[in-house]
Amino acid sequence: MSDALSPEQIEEYKAAFAVFDKNGDGDITAKELGEVMRSLGQNPTDEELNDMINELDVDHTGSIDFNEFLIMMSKKPKYVDPEQEIREIFNVFDRDGSGTINSSELRHVMKAIGENLTDDEIDDLIREADVDGNGTIDYEEFARFFKKD
Image (cartoon, rainbow, N blue to C red; front, side, top):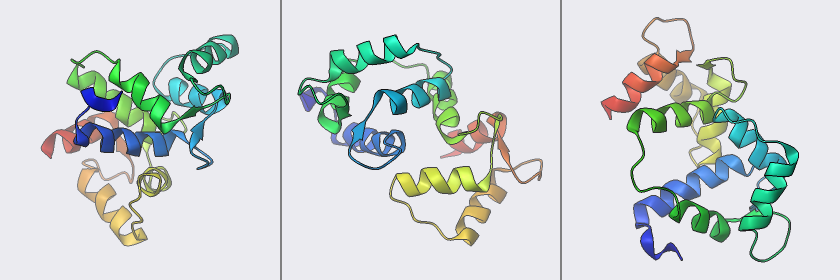
C-alpha cells in the first residue's frame, strides 16, 4: 500500500493529515474533507464529498483514517507543479481564505503538525517572512520564504 511512498513522504502526509483532521480523532470526515478541498480552491458538493469518502473508506466507517489517506496519496500523480504545491500549502495555512496568514493561523497549523511554538517563535517566523512589515504573510511572501529553504 504505502510501499510506493518514501518515509519522507509518509511523514509529510502525516503532518497534512493532522491539519485536515480538525478534531484530532484520527479520521477525516466528509465535512473535514470539504473544508480542506475548499481551502485548496475546489468546491465539491456534499454528494461528491460522500462519494469520495465512500470510495476511500475501505473499512466502511464513514470516514478516512490515516492508512486510507496514504492509499489516496500514493495514487497521486508523481509530478506535481511546484508552484501549485506551494499555493495549496499556502491555502491550508490561510484558514479563513483572506489571502494572508496571520499569527493565529500559523500557530494552528504548526500545532497540528506537532510543532508547539511559543508566541515569540511564531512572531519571529512572521517577521522573517513578512517582507512588507504588515504583520501577515501574503502568498508572494510565503512563496519566497518557502523557496528559500
